[in-house]
Length: 42
Image (cartoon, rainbow, N blue to C red):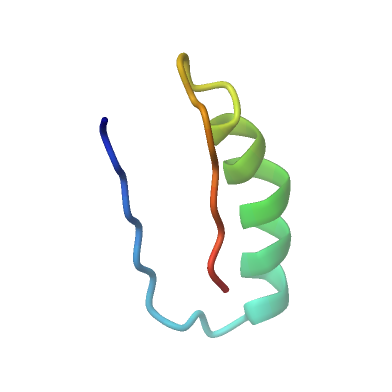
């Protein structure tokens, strides 16, 4: 099993960060081969 953890500093523009993260990064992460589970702790 491989686990990846990403920790980000508090962004100056939270709305922009959230929009970009959920519309760009999450869809890309879902395309990872062999991905079984994706957990978000916000």
